[in-house]
Image (cartoon, rainbow, N blue to C red; front, top):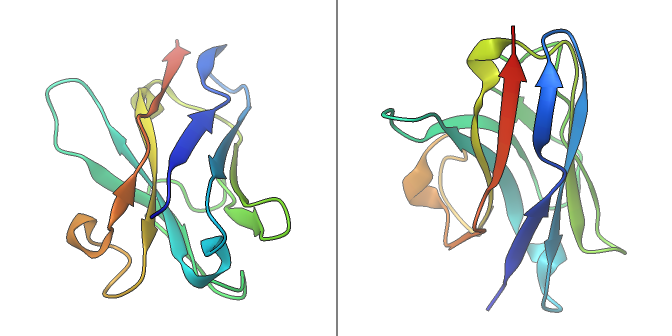
Amino acid sequence: QVQLVESGGGLVQAGGSLRLSCAASGRTFSSYAMGWFRQASGKEREFVAAINWSGGRTYYADSVKGRFTISRDNAKNTVYLPMNNLKPEDTAVYYCAGSTRGNLYYKSSYDYWGQGTQVTVSS
């Protein structure tokens, strides 16, 4: 069992930066691939970025490539998502999630989810 807690959200102006963190409980964190998803008001939850168990492979949605960078520190049981050059369309609740199988682009591949952290980008 893994519990996930996101932090780092907030209000920022367009062009600004935030860094999201996701702290995981449990001793098996390093065995999970981790992902970030986001859900804007009235929209479906969508894939943002993912990282494999070792950190050696990363995956990004086209909309965030070059602006967001996912990383993890298995010694600290934490995954990070620094976000640069934020745009109003990045406004959403951001969720981290843990996966042991499947295509990391799909919500259905994730077994554990955090409660989310709000990111609001003003124009």
